[in-house]
Amino acid sequence: MTTKERAFLKGLAQTIDPVLSLGKASLTPEFVDATAEALKARELIKVNVLKNCIDDPHTLAITLGERTRSEVVQVIGRKIVLYKRNNENTKIYFPGEKVKPNGKK
Image (cartoon, rainbow, N blue to C red; front, top):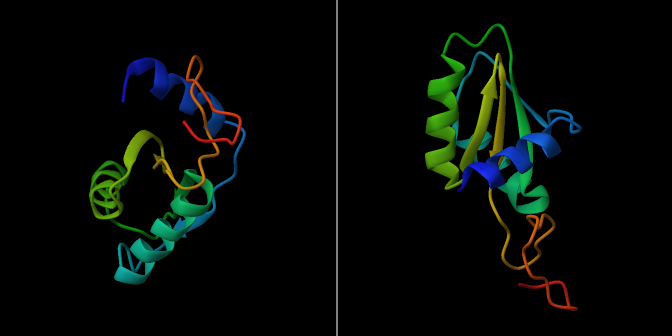
């Protein structure tokens, strides 16, 4: 991911609310599955790390990115932003990216 693409995604992430909250159970297989499903549906998601989660948000972001095969866009405080392109149903197109009339690259 280039820095311009990351900056574009950061701008989009400012307007979205967290769709998942990570609590004291930390990264369970069920949470990873829920994250993967949310990424498939939305492509760009924000995860809230609650105060009762004792793990470091940066470490959690890297691990969650690896397990879901997604890109960590940013970690600010206790918020994690993840991106994974859905090639079947792409919703987010980067500036300058060519889009065919049927919506596919």
